[in-house]
Length: 168
Image 1 (spheres, rainbow, N blue to C red):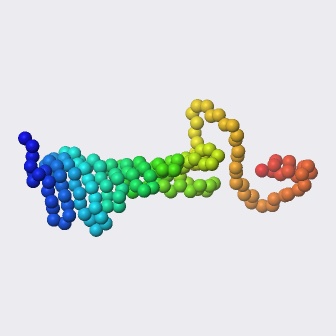
Image 2 (cartoon, rainbow, N blue to C red; image 1 turned 30 degrees about the horizontal axis):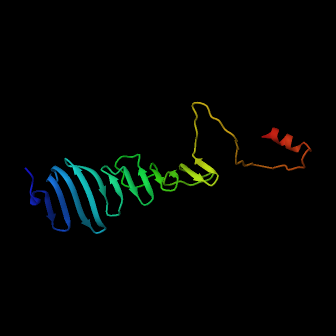
Image 3 (cartoon, one colour; image 1 turned 90 degrees about the vertical axis):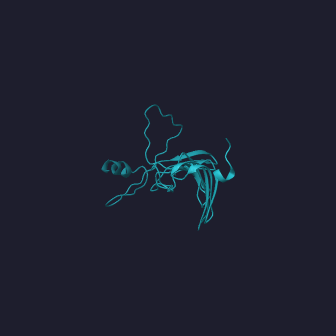
């Protein structure tokens, strides 16, 4: 038998609307629209389990908050239930980029990033382990070295460079 509007629609004082079967805490299946100081929120429930919600900041989240979509892209946090960006998040942005939120490029940087540049794709990570084959068209080594003591610099071909290499 169909339900009446008063059986499925509840208007609460303070700006909350619930539409569905049951009541919160008693097998509620439906939607909840609510107002806070920050704005409005929207939640969907199935048998009292939060499925999806939009928080007052406009972020669309899964029930446990570990997957969400906001103005900066799609995020999947590794730590379940974490409500925000963490160093363990992965961000899929709308400009051909996958990154960790705290990414810093360069030799002393941190995080991970895969993005499209004008010349192709670039991947920056801390360590790389290859179990199978790795094919490289061009391999460039960039190292930083410091010396504690004197550094001899001589003309090319004088033999100083050869002697210096042996000292290291």
